[in-house]
Image 1 (cartoon, each protein chain N blue to C red):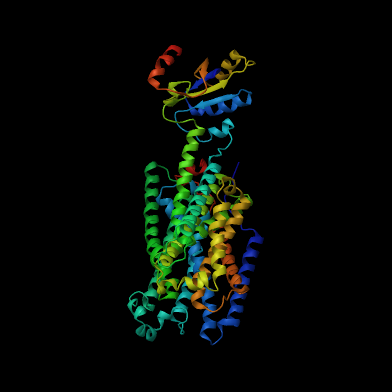
Image 2: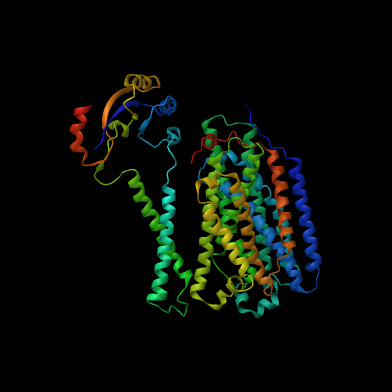
Length: 409
Length: 192
């Protein structure tokens, strides 16, 4: 029996993806007309903040799948080989959204008014003792270099990992020595990626891109917390694509055992996210220092209260109770539902990271925000679909592939 | 004490054991248990054992721990002995989360370990017969329970045809007892 190795993008899939992108573009135009084009800096900041939230969120989410590949490669894991081409294809979106997010971030940092990143205003910084102490880190040159370098490195190292994986499709490895060399090669590049990843997503980049919106406030937990947020959403995205391909008769060798493990990742990292979310909150709550509690004032007690607690329910209570049982992790319906819920929940998480500082007086969430998010979803669908169709769905010559086919939890 | 009669087959390869388990079940024999030197993935499914309910027990222990922690701290700090910590309200849920978490884990883990021991009938000095001492070394033992309708000769033959290296009819203790193995050595020597 032959397997369906090559994914053929269904016409309807592309139509939906393009329609979603069109919705996204319309939403961006709508948002620009209603607020972005206004001369009031707070109104235009609301437009840019929406772009910032969505582009950074979806960039970090698609980037998480390359982190998943590299982490499992470094751990010499074999179980993910049966569906590894799926996260690989998702990570192919990184350069595309990377360019968009990079352009938006640089536009915000250099574009005239300083409502979102008020540390970009040099006159303001000179008068502000807290900001002038942070000048070595929070300045536009450092911001621009770090942003560009980060996106280029993620794209390049991700491309290299995909290249290594696809290089085996044409020529199988004959000897054990060759296979060992291949695994070693993979390990080195994966390690390089992890180093870059830990220096960016896990430590500095969320400080620059998101935390600097509240430039006076800081939390050393912030980047880890952002990483957890995007990683669990990234695993949910992988789960969605795996279920989609299974339902369309692809990925014959990926079975409930693999889906179960993806579900475990979604469950475990939801709990991990809550752990970090709570740790950040509790220390600030305990110390009760005004310059720290100011961050949680609008979020936990002010007008963003609803989003704050809704996000907590979606991101912790729901995964904890729904994904706990074994049967739930093996059920396509439950996994799909929870994956969509988790991605939405962490999108809300990013919403409450960005907006309270930009719009402290009212929650500006309107349909356009969801429209922009749908646009990015369409983009991810379109590019991932193309990347999936370019290479066989099973990396059949990889030395670890058998380990995945007989995987058993 | 319940000594029962068994038809016992000893296998020397799990690749033979697996299809043998399936064939024996299909032929309608009732497998008492299979003893293996190491855990074999999927053997529980092949034997038709139901999924363990240890998880459910763990969940119940966990929420018991959560309820105990929240309930006790709430009672202690808001009703019984109110203490002012840095001007915070007496009912300060965030401060109780770490203890709640720890108690949840403690209750769940200790409870599950004890339940596991109970389900597997494990305890210090408690002994169970495992049919063949070599089942802890290199032999896979399949024991079929005999009823008064079992044709032993046929069962022995069948086990041999599905690949058992050594077959015999034995009387074995199925319950646990308290004792030490050196005391029972004589017993084994007498029987084997």
